[in-house]
Image (tube, rainbow over the protein chains, first blue to last red):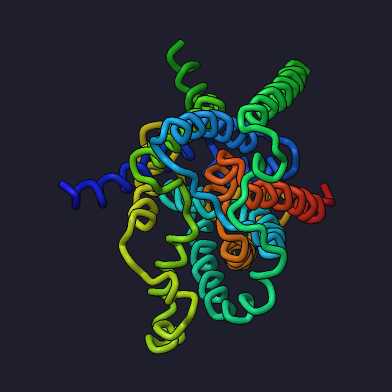
Length: 183
Length: 183
């Protein structure tokens, strides 16, 4: 039973995630590239909705004692540099790591080639880890902090602002897309 | 009559046949996050497990001694944990979705790339490989990817993850504008 849970559980979770990514069209390289070219907002629609829906549920689960937060360390220099490289890599590759794994299974051969590149990237990171630890990883560290901690603005206000902001933005995107379709 | 319908179906672009709303998909991923937090205590993420698996590929390149001595892989050894099984599930789910929706297709060079850089398969493979290196190095430096930071961290309102999202999108927009500037 426990073996079932420790293997079947995550495999099913991953399968559900992969299924949703494919249905959301984000395992398509063109969709991702066109998000960064501001021609297709599918990626932001999926991520924005996931963050608001997921966040409200997880907030409720934490408040009722059913889970806890798993916040990553705010090593600000490392996160900023890493995210900058990530943005470059995502546009050149045309995928992010999760969508790439989905794309390989849907017939994208170039995603498989990039996945080998990702293995090389992980190896390079491991080889340079000691240097990074000494020079980058411990610069400007804030710890496992959350926006409500550093701003004193409560969680629910953050989510209300996010939901309204995302709602308005998507409404604007949808009406612009509808206009373009009519022309 | 039937011939018109048949040719219409045949000529419909395959991506257009997936008709799930991106908002529905986003909400589904949000819901999946509730389960990940409450049942498994392990938020959705890809690259931590990916770099565990990468150590396998590093063995023939740098030798088993060097892998065993590496301080990064000491902190993150290869083990078949939740995250690694989750990675196994992603392609399985994406394959299921693609087969069910009839969107499985062999892709060597994506359309967006072809329009800008031509039909050369070698060129695209080199691009994908280099992009893969950069994206994974960045993901490990930042401590997560679009899933671990973007969705799981974003929905927890983590400071590190919102910094990641902002910098990732900003550099992505910039490099995309450079890469596709001639069109």
